[in-house]
Length: 436
Image 1 (spheres, rainbow, N blue to C red):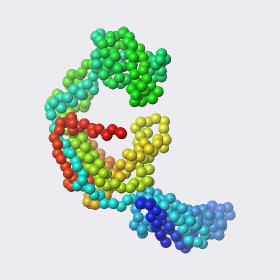
Image 2: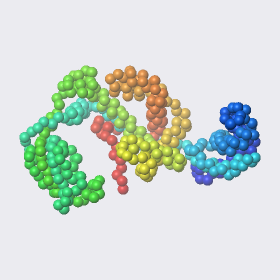
Image 3: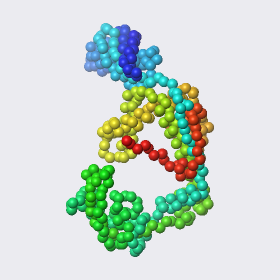
Image 4: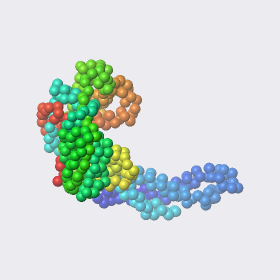
């Protein structure tokens, strides 16, 4: 087998492969012999059909099948011989495929980029530290109470945080517009559900009262037909209900599956969850800084095949998350290209760090992570056992641990600054930079 390789770009390879005619005929004859054993032809017993008859009827199909098999096997042999690492399936262009002659074809494909990860010393990381103070715990208990708020009817005037039942009709230039009217809608004042001024305009209203609100839709309103326009809303307040926070009782604790249904037991369980969230938030922020630093220090070219595959994965995820009667391929690729490129590049960089430093998943850390996740469940031992009985789930945890070990490896060489902050600041998500 003769092989020649041409570099047509930084990553694209054009490989020409020639397979000797003898190998082709051997493959074709093997196919024909397999066919002869099971062919059913009138006038002949199975397995007794003369090869001349088999060849006359089936040689064309056998040759095509042999072509497919030979291309697949010879391509694999060639990339191994040439020490190439394809990043996707090749495009095959047959040059010649005639009986009695060598088979020659061209395979066009991309290879994974070859690089060494560098620039660890240029990466700056701010590592936060925080504790769950009693005040933080008290605030979280209030959040949980508000999440389980009940509303009770009241005769007083409406205030922020009250729940109103309203009817409203919106008009622009005296004409009702689509989506601008509703009946029996429940609205909590101060929730920000409605356009600016709507909820504020109902503060002080009483049940049975009608109010007319003259408001302007924001310039960046999602419905472009309404953006920036002035509308008149006639609102009727049907009823007003005031919020009633639940008391911290056994009944309230039971909603959260707390075994020890006491205030102390509840506070202990909530604190554990907050500490778990805190550790994860700090870890995630450190990891994001490390990954951003690796990206900045290691610009690499991305194989188109890997980028397309990742775009398609993100399309499928978007459809699964948001639903709707839309096929993944109908979503524009441009929506996902930036995120896909980041994922692909980081995947290549992380894999190369693992290779450079010969990293293996630390099984002790794997068990520790599984136990950490299991602690959020009522029967943690069963959860741990489940992970160790499911290879796919276990390997996913190993991949996460291996990525953490990559982060630790980078941190040993990066410039790390430790900073003590409040719990609230530590768990607050990092805001994405505003678009220009």
